[in-house]
Image (cartoon, rainbow, N blue to C red):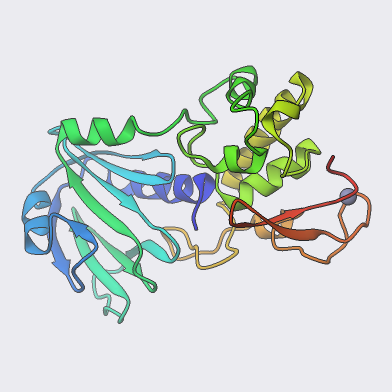
Length: 269
Ligand SMILES: [Zn+2]
């Protein structure tokens, strides 16, 4: 599932093209994952002018000049891709937007993604449900988020979107590896130094991944249909049985909080 670096990559690419443009038409090819349903969605947003394409946690947020907006959650297989005018729809496409001179396709093979049109008030409320953005805090502030609850394991805390926004499975595993912390550690067992190391690792890994336009471990592609380049820099995620890039010990995959979790049993304590 796209996490902060992937969603941020798409956001930047879309914002560069769509900011200031007006939605001219919305063609709904497959209905059911939008709110309001069907043509009511198209009607609600046609004619709206885009103030900016923003991001909150893993949501792409279309902010309109009248204060209303759309939240898009791509989920497992969703894509938003800028296409040419003469684009021929494929079977997984859900919607085609004409926005100013641009054409944007929302496609989704598994169809878990969501697109919601919200009033200004509803949008503000939705965006306030998440924890802070990791790249907007100082490391010491992030470190404080991982003090409690003391019995919770650090991996669960990392991908809880109400604790910290935007980190999912890939970047949780990568941050913990860099911080040399085992994913099953209880928050109460972390020292102040552990927490600070984790905070710095989170920021570092997210920044590096954004620079390389994210990780294409599964279906993710950016708004130009290009894969991200961070995959080959992953140190633990998806590397079960392969040698640790630091010490050579085979990387272990286990399940923590129902998520596949990768770590080095030697480097991470
Ligand atoms: Zn190692």
